[in-house]
Image 1 (cartoon, rainbow over the protein chains, first blue to last red):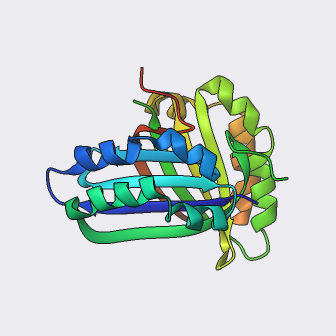
Image 2: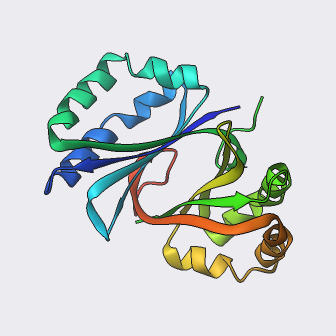
Amino acid sequence: MPYGHNGSMKVKPGHRDAVVAILLDGVERLRDAGCHLYVVSVSDTDPDTVWVNEVWESAAHHQASLDLPEVKESIGKAMPMLTGEFTGQQLTVVGGLGVPRPT
Amino acid sequence: MPYGHNGSMKVKPGHRDAVVAILLDGVERLRDAGCHLYVVSVSDTDPDTVWVNEVWESAAHHQASLDLPEVKESIGKAMPMLTGEFTGQQLTVVGGLGVPRPT
């Protein structure tokens, strides 16, 4: 079954759009690492948070992606703009619209 | 910008898989209503919750979908198996992998 991760990160005031730009830069490359979906969102009611919903081929694919040079570089760029407050929920994706069927 | 909704619902013990089946039944039809993504997930660590992450063309498309006969029917079928505890976060989707580009 695909692995899902619903996460959010708090950004230092005024840095949200810069963090979003870092997250979106080169996001298509994650496909080769086994990423099916990587959805970046914001909210009008909470201007200092960025949400990322991910679907990966497996938890192992997600974990391995954290060692990719381009991912490490993105994390390094974004980190100074984050407060260090994160939320995260690990999930097993069972299906739906726009997600790969379980194999 | 597309509209996102991250939601979860608590199910009565033992009813999770039945609720998942209802959510997945005919999910492809939501595409015609303006739904881009409808990701249904579960968690090993919380057997009585179902997560649904949605991306719609707009908040209006999402709202209108709740009046579709097939959606009303699904809600009616699932409701007796839910505890009534929901979480929901409304979002503006700014981009990513697997989501439509803003127009």
